[in-house]
Length: 465
View 1 (cartoon, rainbow, N blue to C red):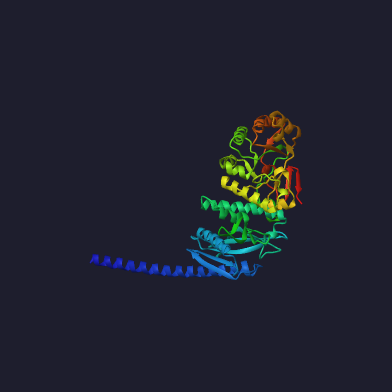
View 2: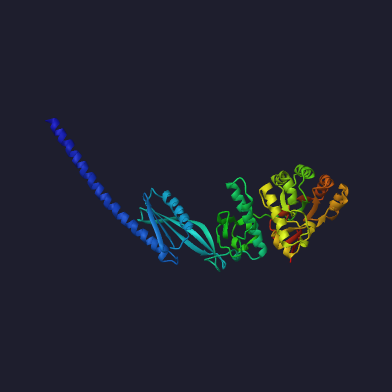
């Protein structure tokens, strides 16, 4: 009998527990449902406040979803760039997943903010909200803002290179930077570049002032006028082309400045007519011993004869420039011949070193406007001539340099003469005693040298007309 009563008691307890559980679950579902309804009402109100009560235009498309307890919403224009939408989605998902364990909301959209009369910043905005049980309302947590692109006020829909590049010389400088980047990218995919591919890059006019651009936070995306090496667009770091574009584009960028200390004295040693496999090699040894970086203006025919020496020049951190292929007076030959001299030397240097020259020294210093435009590179002259080719005496070479040097001098020497190379240790010693430091041409000119201009020294730049 007792056993029977015990079973009845247990059964009743189970029924009571079940009833209480169901009742509790029902009551909690009612509470949760009421809170969820309130939450969704707050979400709608927040979205309305964020968009429709403010002057945020061009919101025609939307996406929404859930990550457990989090709801997320994206709003953007029907004509929005696909890459921008992908970035917005990624930014939204990161925020949503971080809040997935709480009743919360993430709201993302593309916003435009006027920077000045010239620029408009397009930002990816993600706002985060969390449900506050005490106040029964959505509480604003904070927001993420990422700059996606920069628009030009005067031409926001189809900006062109001409909108940020003022001079033909700047366009030529950017063209060489893009050429080298194209070849560098290609080399990573293929171990060697054939002649046809090299010609595509060096001879095709795929870049012009009318080339379309997109200004990104840290780079400029350039759409080529025609396909080259299978490529139609390329992103170029703003830092690389900074000296050649409108500074208003990067006024708020914290980019490193490549400039010399104005309180110190500098000179640039430059060596012409090499490389050979004797004196040039010896010179590289002397420069390495002295811890000096110099600039070599090489002849294309000498590079073809001594490619390993050219490669060593670049490999040891020196700067390499073009000095033509056969050393003619370029003002006395046809412009087609000038093109040939430049192209053959570019190819020789690239095949030997993997880089393109960014500087040009015309044989005998002879240049005019037509020749400079055909060359398309900054022209580097000199203001200290060692006259080593004439005197061929190491002491006289040193004296000539010391007597005429000044801060910012570009010193002309020839690495193909044994006496010239033998003069370097004493020359360096004398210059250091006088407080001079040694830099490459690009370092001396703070990487801002432009085509259609010739440079005789740090403070002597002349436009070529």
